[in-house]
Amino acid sequence: MNLTERTTAALAWIDGQLAICNAATDGPWETDLASKHPAIFNDNGDFLATDVWPNDATFIATARTGYPAMLARMKVAIDYLRDGDDVKPINSILTTIESLN
Image 1 (cartoon, one colour):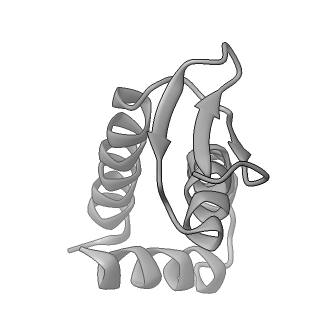
Image 2 (cartoon, one colour):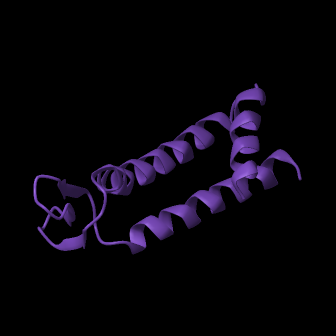
């Protein structure tokens, strides 16, 4: 694949990952680790899960916000780098994304 095709495929993969994130209950998510049954809630106070290990609850809640934000920033970086003269930075990003497929 040429660079344009690789870039298009990478952006499509990112969009697919964002679709998975956006299909979940709206974030950001928060945790209540002080109770006997640690739980995860969204900002509206909607109950999402309970009886999860505290470390898992923290990871899940953080990932709900952090992963989509990182994906969105990757799209910005790819858009910026694909118009540059040096292909090494974008090639590095595309190779990493391709390894995730």
